[in-house]
Image (cartoon, rainbow, N blue to C red; front, side, top):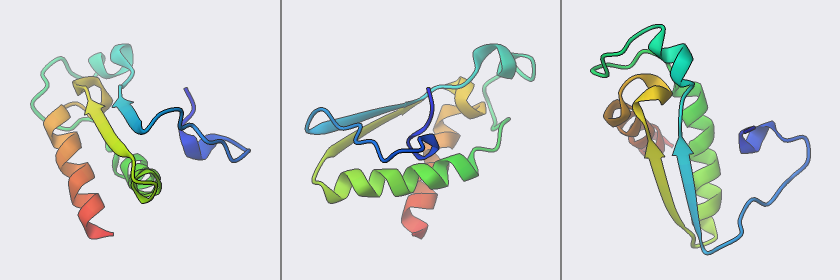
Length: 91
């Protein structure tokens, strides 16, 4: 599915008073690189920086935001969440 910033038109994705964002990766592609989920394999900094902006828009609307990262997104889900939090705090 395209990310919110990839749509040509301004689309409001909100259909409830909360938002759920799953960061899921390409299982087949990443498992060609690793099957041990102990470190970041794919650099998602650019992607997560864009998500920070999207989350800030949701939060400005007093929405609850729930995000979930699986290991297939970048190689290590705790590292993904840590990176997102660092990027969020930087801006």
